[in-house]
Amino acid sequence: MEKLKEMINSFSESMTILNQRGYEKQSLTLFFTYLDQLGWLTSSTEFSDGSDFRNWIDTYLL
Image 1 (spheres, rainbow, N blue to C red):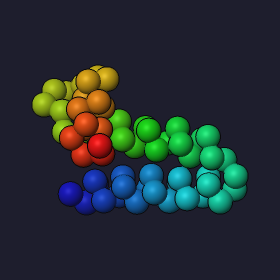
Image 2: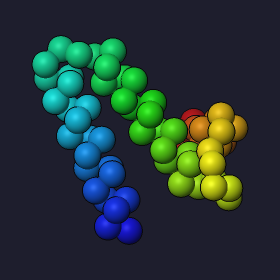
Image 3: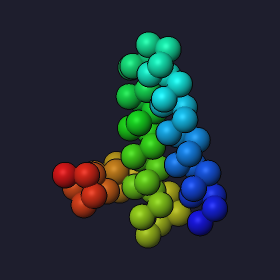
Image 4: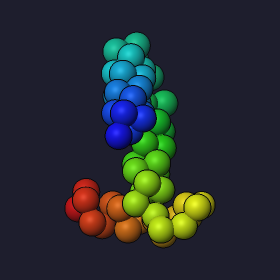
């Protein structure tokens, strides 16, 4: 659980810094990478694919 907290904090801090410095596109790219990682965490397989990302979005974001 601690590693998950570290990952969330790292992504959040990185996106904040990018936004503050005017790098909105890079921040958005990192945001989608973050969502992809969350999709992978809910995957039942060792490797994630696009369906894991879409399933996570459909389940938790929409």
